[in-house]
Length: 265
Image: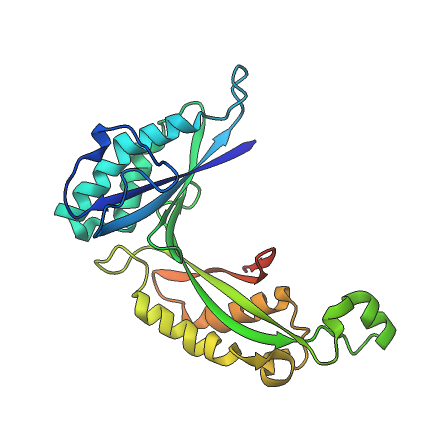
């Protein structure tokens, strides 16, 4: 099965300028364009299915763009202007219902609404009515990859430069993803400032500008690989983010822009 994702970028401006009456001239930046004070969003549409035998497309991306602009963007506009309490998960669910049969025979597999470059809501067909919320964080730390059960030569062969006795550092990115149903009028799964404070107190303050091997107790007997860092963070956060409506779905840690690991249980 093929999965195709198209990200549709658009703005809801303070003034209702009805730019959808005109063809886009800068689709890279988004359409309608942000022309000052307003709201800028991206909506990632993932379709699943087989290729069209004539075009060898799963779906023509122009048709995805056109359908989202015709059906979804007016809903965003109306909700933001007239019914803001419906924003967030309720609106995403309504849009999913509206689009789920829009591109037959392809099936709508998921929608991801990015509220900022770091905060997003997503809805997956197999998880409904639950919604996912993802927020990104960052911290800087140093580590050394070394297994005391191996000889020095075996460690050098296994870890290469990462076995440097003096360690080395990374600017890590951390994404924490929750899954559940909204418990408040914001349409989100959790109060975002409270969520950020929990992650900061539990993880960021504990890891930031630390030597993970020497200063973080969880790595006294664990090699601080990106895989183990993701697992340790998940297990630190899991009891802190559990509620009747919401639980921790996954933790993803980027060691570099080219290397990251997701962990879930």
